[in-house]
Amino acid sequence: MIKKLDDRRPDLRQRAPFSVMHLCLPYGKHICADGTEVFFNRYYQPIWKMRNGQYLPADPGEWITYVAQEWFYDDHNPPWVSRKTHEKCLLMLQARHKASALPEP
Image (cartoon, rainbow, N blue to C red):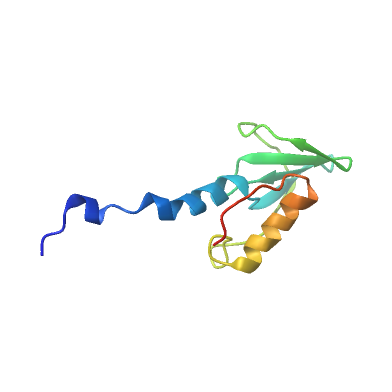
């Protein structure tokens, strides 16, 4: 049987949760010299900051100078596969009053 071109293309509907999670969920944080914590997504774009106990939006294009970094998951347990990691990331968002309806893995 000959496959049509459309049969070989990935179903973008299946990739949507993956893409949304890459952008919206925290992947890790940078810790700056002044104690500011800058949370970043899977593309290492800043998504919010915590400074002096206050959460602030971050500029995704901002270059962050940091002294340490921490990751919340790796390629073995990403939130689009692991329900535990997904819930951990959502709890971080809820704690920062940034919770939104995101697709489950």
